Length: 200
Image: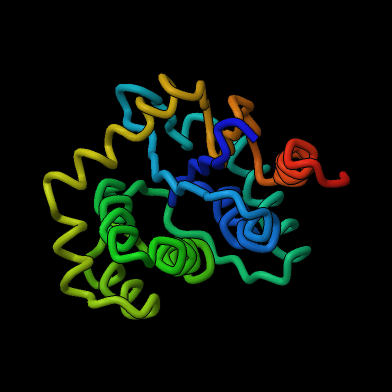
């Protein structure tokens, strides 16, 4: 198929991106299509989103995430409502990805945040995430504090909007088509199979 790759935009801020990450390999890993994992997070100037301004939305999100977690056999523990410094965890992911362990780190980071309710803006949490992913904590902490990688992570949201027209996470893009939401992965899967000549 043309543009034979999948771009997966995710953010450690989103529990829905967590659900997508947990199912990523099972849903899409056997298609023989490369998956590019792209970390993004909204910066206030580009995407102002203060959860305290919409308490009804937050209450619904908590209810919905608990319902989805139960369905998937996952345990959820919500972190504090304060946003940490998102550049650290997303830059750490980029460092892990450069070592070929991006997916492992991503899963462990999501589990720290939404399974254990921990703050991904703290060095000790990032270091423990690295250990759980089988990586050297000091190397990943250096990546987390790297000016180069933090700048790359902070540009992710803008690049995703300009290149693929994304407006939230999780988002998947393949062959110029956008699929938004963890509950749209099966549509993407079917599209890839159809374009490759399989049955779906």
